Amino acid sequence: MKKTLIVNANIVNEGRAFESDVLIVGDRIDSVGPDLSSREADEVIDAQGKFLLPGAIDDQVHFREPGLTHKATIGTEARAAVAGGVTSFMEMPNTVPPTFTRELLEDKFSIARRDSLANYSFYMGASNDNLDEVMKVDVRQVCGLKIFMGSSTGNLLVDDGKTLEGFFSRFPALIATHCEDEQTIVHNAEVYRKKYGEDVPVTFHPLIRSAEACYKSSSFAVELARKHGTRLHVLHISTRQETSLFDAETPLAEKKITAEACIHHLWFSDEDYDRLGTFIKWNPAVKTEADRQAVFEAVLDDRIDVIATDHAPHTREEKTNTYFKAPSGGPLIQHSLVAMLEMCHQGKLSLEKVVQKMAHNPATLFQVAERGFIREGYFADLVLVDLDRPWQVSSGNILSKCGWSPFEGQMFRSAVTHTWVSGHLAYRDGVFDDSRKGHRLLFDRN
Image (cartoon, rainbow, N blue to C red; front, side):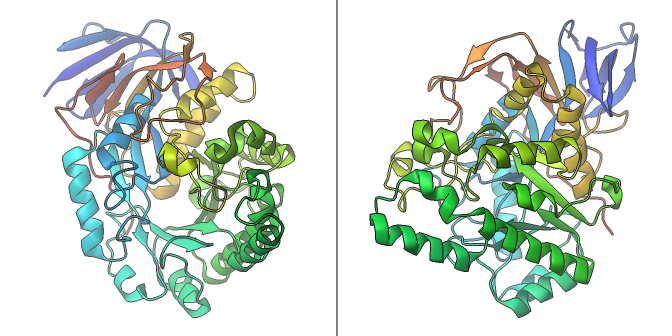
């Protein structure tokens, strides 16, 4: 087994920053200590002046395969993830066909096993008629069940009350929800369509997919979870009102109801629509500056537990359509970690908090086996970052297949220099090593 020794690293892990060395043997962290330079190694990497973090775990991505591979593939987006310091991802079921059966789920695992440079898991998708199939899933091998409790494509919207009760009362592991009330959205869209036709200005997107629509659905999901004792994870919180639904006092490992914030809801506000238009059209919508600040505060005080991306590529041509035709979503995974490091530079949060929200907490709340921390015996999912290596996002350095980013033109002060995935140095200073692929994530559940 290959041995790699990382020396003189500034490690950020479990609420502490300290200088230490790390020895990787095979796919695991063998030793963490202040002076391992005498240990035998096949490769020594001097991390002087850089920071070694546990790899980020992104609990919400859309890599578009199968069926939508003109936008992205598992292979292309996993490379973008690794270049951005994301070593593990959990991918959503709204592909073509949707992931409603165990057979379709395993088809995606087969693609990832062949093509993904990052570690991977996939959500089983819920529909109005697949409860029995969902109950046959092995929850030790699948990250969770995704329920769209708001408008989506095809038959992914679960709007039957009896079915929802069935999922919330019977599924034994984590349920992740997209929460926007469909009837509210349809009503609001009709109001603006009557006034503007198909050319509704995108600035009205946060009024169509309104704060009311989000809170109505999120509060309903929380009510169901409390009724049935469900392990609920509410995705992409975007409003001030929703932050009141979550608890900052209970230790994460004991929480039954958790929440996620996404990069775009922490970075952008409705003031950016005039500049970026449909390129920041997401569901749920980017809302007001007051909402952005409230979501950020909830991240800081631990009402919101995880920072992720909802990485969802579309082609540039698709995004430049009129309001109703332009799809929602955009690519973020390559820039998620450096965006949060930029906020560290701005004094908005600490490195320890970034690591907590992007690595430790996803591992804890999903019960990911032996990942998410720099611990002896754990898998070596590690990221080395230089906090003083400025670079600018441009079309020439974007790795997502769609070839664009809402961050184009943004100057970041930090850069990812090395990424280890399950002990394999998959990325080094702009160069990938595809000789080994990532691992399937496993989960410590009964």
